[in-house]
Length: 377
Image (cartoon, rainbow, N blue to C red):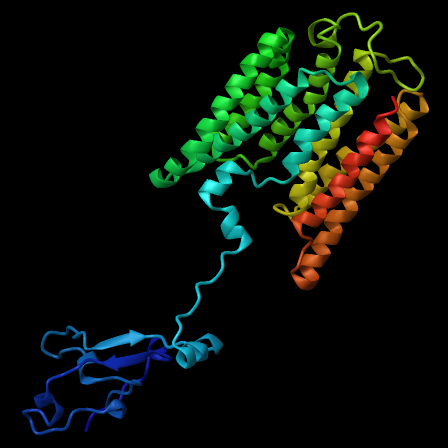
């Protein structure tokens, strides 16, 4: 009489398929005893082939574990019509992560406003120059080339790197050609390499380390993009004002409400506010998406926005800044605290946070308000 042994948890919910055996093994064995049943072994679905050989202690591969999924509506349609099951459609995240698409079209949607608004600020203050028709495509091409290079550096697969070579080469060559023509037309633009070089070096170093989405990388790239407002102003005034606008600024366009700041001093204040806005969006957006429930980051973000709002109110009271722009900074400070807290509550309550597109629309509204409140001066 055989003794049954207790079953192990790993043996449960596993279906074993008996391997095909010769017809002679279906009857009693040489000892005259019948083959043991499931109740003799104490395991569900156990077969003689799934037991260990007492002589050698080794198990024979006679049982094949398999998992059986419950049939669904697609299986019924396949059995009724004979058509194969349709392949699942790729999600937006899968499409976004395709290496070819990722190299041609950057997936950082907030970068588009960062590439457009600062040059427009320079136009509003100083005026439009035809050289912008060369400079802006070169600047946008430089960002696209930076994006392609960052994807190429972070990719380890040789096959995926080969996919990235075409956009990388086209963006790099186009940027180099347009940049050379622009510098030949306006050679005074070379002076802007002095403030831009360290910022781009920080961003490139973060990409090399695989941290292109770090706080340091975001602040460096947004600060470089904000400088484009001063660059387009330099194009508008034809390079007047000395090295980086630190020389004589008499007779140049742009002035504060009380007229005490004019020309480059006023433009540098506007550029600083532009950089403060875009650099402030970096930790703000991180607290909404990648750094949720990071209270230290949220506290730092709110503190920076509150400090700029306080400085704006003081400048407005002194006549150096329009009051509507100072009020806008108060709204930005409130937004930097209220929106992340609301986002965190949504995640806790229903696990469905605000979509990045919703946050992007709100930032477009603030960008337009920023431009409008600074435009009259």
